[in-house]
Structure formats: structure tokens, C-alpha cells
Image (cartoon, rainbow, N blue to C red; front, side, top):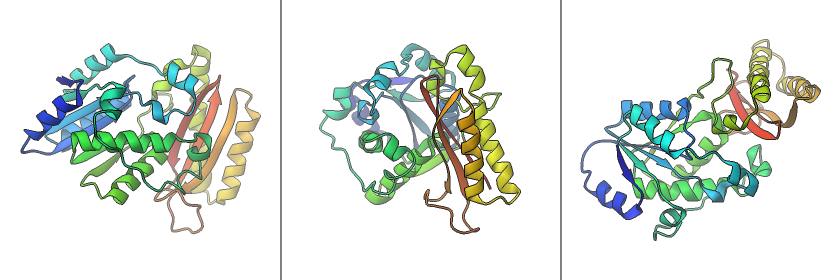
Length: 278
């Protein structure tokens, strides 16, 4: 696996890649099987796969969260080699933001007004900035993103659409532990006791799906799950909402496909998940 730390070195190498489809998996490291599945998917669909590891300070609205974000570079490199990633981009802050490559900004008015938007001010702006720069450096034909961060995928799709990048965004299903907990780098921060309780998040999503299949109204499903979360003293509810999978608008007609989205705190660690209900 090739490892690039300098932006210009990667750009020069990329210029010499005349043929073949280029895949890209952007990450913040602390890799797990969910990330590796994205790499495998890219390997299946493209000829050459780049992975980036960069903990982007601009998308953390909580400085404490940034400082505590797990960093496991040596292990990450071993994992990427185990799935035959072709190249790793491992830049510093300066190599991303001071390399002369300008970032793009898009209209996030709506996506910033719902769900993660109000809870994490500036988060999606930071995501757009770093991803737009990485796209310009790597120039992939296809980029692979996990659906655990459902709203983030919608933001990236908007970026590509608004800026007309010639990139296909491939959303990939959430990878779960055997007990249903969505794989996340933040799971490593859970205490053993909290880790045992965490799968309850997925159980609430499954219950929402079951109620939807039994034709319960959306509002009633939301109220039922919110009430259950609030009664569980282990969890602090941030939000639970059911939205349209296409654009995260409110569900107003039976033709729309719903997705349930949840954010809770467990022992001070914020965990998010989602499940399509139909």
C-alpha cells in the first residue's frame, strides 16, 4: 500500500494514473469493520482505491470531543493492508488546508436546520470544506460513505450536485456488531457496562420499524419511542425523528420512504444510528 503524507506528492502520482476507475474512502481513522467494508466495496467497483485518514478539526463543534477522538494510526495501516487498499493519504492540517487548494461551500440552510444541524453547529460546514478539498486532490470517480451518518451522506450528495463534481457517491449500509450496535469509532470510548447497554439503541429502531409495518401513524411511532427512551435512565435523548429517506423532509404522504434517526447520550458519549422503515 502506498502512503502519501504530502498533498503535492499525491497529486503528482494521481496525474500519472491515466486509466482505470478511481475509488475513494474518506475516514477519520480509528478504523473498524464498517470502514473496511467501504474499502472492500470500492475494491469491487473500481480499479484503484484511495483511503484518507484525517481528523478534521473544522467539523468538531466540541473541542473536548476532538481531543478525545481515538487515534490508532499503526493499527489503521495494518487493517488497510489486510483489505488491500491501494493508497493511503495521511495528511497534516497544513497539507489539507494550506496546500493552495481551495475548499467549496454550499447552501446548507435546510440540512443545517434539522437533526444533527442544530445539535452540532458548524459540523456540516466543516465536512463540506474537507471533503471538497479531498475530492479535488484525489479526483475519484466514485466515493464511498457509510449510511450510519445518514444526514452526512445527504450533505455530500448536495455538495456533488451543487458543485457538479463528476463523482458518483455510493452510500453503503451500516455495519453492525452481532448485538446490533452500529459500528463507530466512538464505541471504543464506552465503558464495558455502557457497551452492554448500547445495543438498546438498535432495539428502539427495530421497534419503530415494527410499528410502521403495523400501520401506526408516524407521529404516534415517534411519541412511543421518545417516551421509551426518556423512561430509560441509562440514556439521554438528543432526538428521535422519522424523515423521508430521499431528502430528510417531513413525512406527509404514504408514497414517501421513511427512515428513523436517533441520537442519544450514553455515559456522556453521543451515539447516532438510523434505520429505514420500509
